[in-house]
Amino acid sequence: MLTFLLWLFLFIICWPLAIAALILYPFIWLLLLPFRILGFAIDLSFDLVRNLFMLPFRLVGVK
Image (tube, rainbow, N blue to C red; front, side):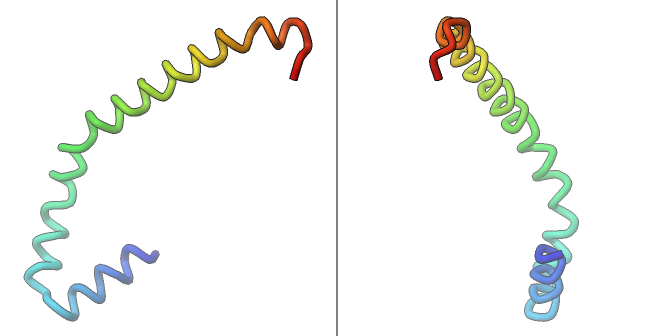
């Protein structure tokens, strides 16, 4: 909702820029999608390594 209100404010202030942002947003989202997937994969790999190191402590019962 806040994004839409900011876009409306931009539309009132400078409508050509608001229309350009509306048209370019899907292309920018597609351009940034591989970086989101890479970040997700790196986050999962760090979680896996952390859980592998914490496994002996969980088995012993240390918190």
